[in-house]
Length: 79
Image 1 (cartoon, rainbow, N blue to C red):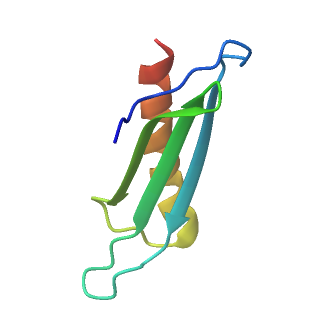
Image 2 (image 1 turned 60 degrees about the vertical axis):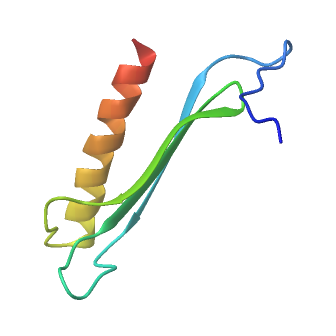
């Protein structure tokens, strides 16, 4: 099986990000789940799905923490 990234000639190369947060997914340690995906020209170039390292006190707090993590990755990718 051959695997790799595919960048078509006709695609617009712009960075697009998607973010998803699951608040208090694990009842044993109260850590929320974060997942993000970044694409460039329709091809996935960066993704991650992990538990947050800080306990969020609300769903809004969990989303702010996730947004910070994903925006840090976005800034790194855009450099």
